[in-house]
Length: 280
Image (tube, rainbow, N blue to C red):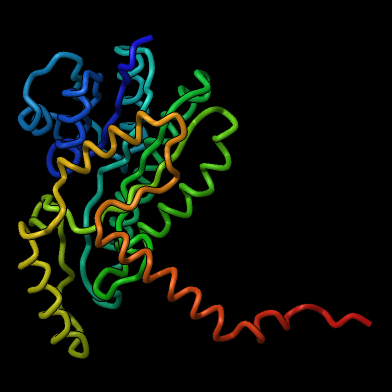
């Protein structure tokens, strides 16, 4: 039996999505590479055997259904879905407009749901499949200047954890991927939208945080080509992990979160366990 798999990757016009698609193709798989601008996807990936480029705005449910149907019509199945498309609305909560927060959630939370909803019937019918959703260290711990982004990624992780229990009986696996800081295009003007500084109380901190993020662009320690190879390894596992921490910095965030949770539990343990009705 061939090890060739059919990968469906969102956000494949730039950043990690391009690396994921290239790695999957180089390993002998077929790839449906999607993006809002299919021309940009084709330009990024070029021509390759077993590459299909499809237009997909993940915030549009009709787009998701059409893209998945096109993939099925061409390849007959989808083995691996990579929910990668995302953006970053940076700023303090009070400075971000309600519309910006809605746009953040639409792309980074509702978007993966739209695509997964379209793919799941195909996977259920075959009783096999693997859904990988790209989260972040900001899906584990809340960070200053990241309130909208954290809301989307925390939501993504809660949904994925619940989804795991729902689809596992059908032979469908799920993996949350938590990358640390990787050298991608996420901090470029095309992917990051900064809130307008609008509240004096935040002004100084806003300037400092924005300058820090701008300095990080292109200097991140993580190599996205290595993450792409890691996803290939994970996709090849008979029992893939439900969560993968990508990078030493991601592990550090997770370990800090675990320690903080334990400290919070211990600090109020006596009060916490005193919540039951008194027995007569």
